[in-house]
Amino acid sequence: METLLTWDLKLFFYINGKWNNGFLDFLLPWMREPYFWAPLYLFLAVFVVYNYKWRGFFWMVFFIVTFALTDQSSMFFKDAVARLRPCRDPLIAPYVRVLVTYCPMSGSFTSSHAANHFGLAMFSFLTLRPQIGKWAWLFFFWAAIIGYSQVYVGVHYPTDILGGALLGILAGLLSGGFFQRRIRLELEKTT
Image 1 (cartoon, helix red, strand yellow):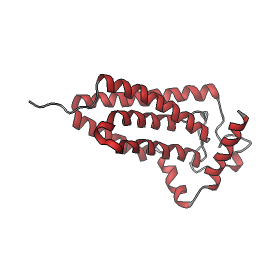
Image 2 (spheres, rainbow, N blue to C red):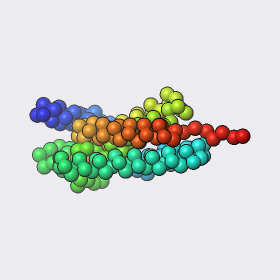
Image 3 (tube, rainbow, N blue to C red):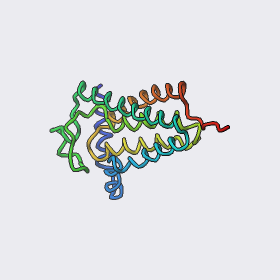
Image 4 (cartoon, rainbow, N blue to C red):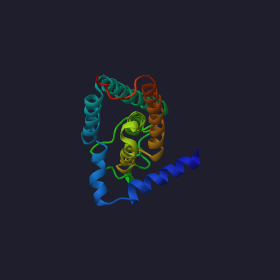
């Protein structure tokens, strides 16, 4: 465990302190903000309801349930593990580049951003891949950028992101698998 935590800390300081530039300093704090990524999710909601009618409505319900499941599960782990965030840890906080206006008080493990976005990515991948093909892999790329941003701005360690991603993927597999078995997005047949 000590080796893992040492590796985690080293990787954190590479991402947060060495692998940086002015463009990323500007972009990545925005990537983690809801008003930046909410339009994508709004577009998905409109797209599925418009194209799949009542099935699209149920897709939205499952999408929201997936988000709630990942968010609440992540909060459970945050409370249970009670790991200090890098920007709150008195031993390393003076060396952390914090690129956001606040450092959250909640625990660090697991990252709720990572859990939420990887959960939604897995759910969207499973349910939309038949319609959009290889483009569905972009959901994971999107989630990975948001997870990386959390480390870059100084509010999470890499293992927090990994734990959140695994938690989210599991939740997305459960909700997406259930949705695909019971409802599935299909165009309404016209007679």
